[in-house]
Structure formats: structure tokens, C-alpha cells
Length: 115
Image (cartoon, rainbow, N blue to C red):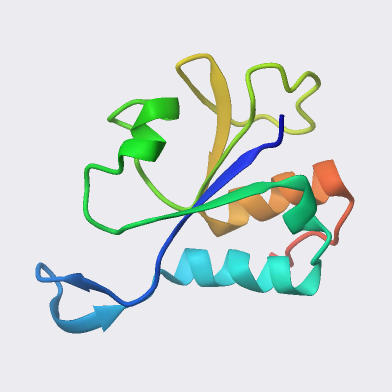
């Protein structure tokens, strides 16, 4: 089973912020990483979710308290985790562009993000 990468679909509305539509900067950064290293898409299950909560697909794996995206969720049977992550419902996961990119560098051997 592959790690699951949840990312937000672009062009979402957020009335709390103001008029118009938005994209998630963290998701855009990870999209850029996937574009630079296209072989990653073969090693990941990439799933796009809508901005409004509840995000049921994420909740199913990580619980209601952990709906932030982007999120990379490792399968329960993943084995040796290359760098520590967060934990929920017996799964290791990473949230945000930096955490996800650091994991991908350690796991898939791509370049690390520059600090």
C-alpha cells in the first residue's frame, strides 16, 4: 500500500477571509515538488479534497482533529519510518509543505527543501 497524500483542490471560496477564490500555498508547493520529481506520483496515492470541513476522506484515516491539508498519511503496515512524524489512530502522518517535503526527501531520495 502507498502513502496517501491529501491536497486541497484549488479555486475554493473562504467567506471568512473575503471575496474571491483561493489556492492553498502549501498544496501549491507540494504540487511543485511533484512536478520536479514526477516519479513520486507513482509512489504515492494522491487524493484531492475540497476546502470546506469536514474533510471526510482525511477524517477516515486521522480523525476529526487532524483535517489539515496537505497531509501525507503512511499506511499502517509502512514499516521503518525514515523521520519522525505525527501520530493519530495508529498512523504516522506529516502536515504542511515542509514536513511532507522532508519526509519525501528521506524516503524517496529527492533533494531536501532549503531552509
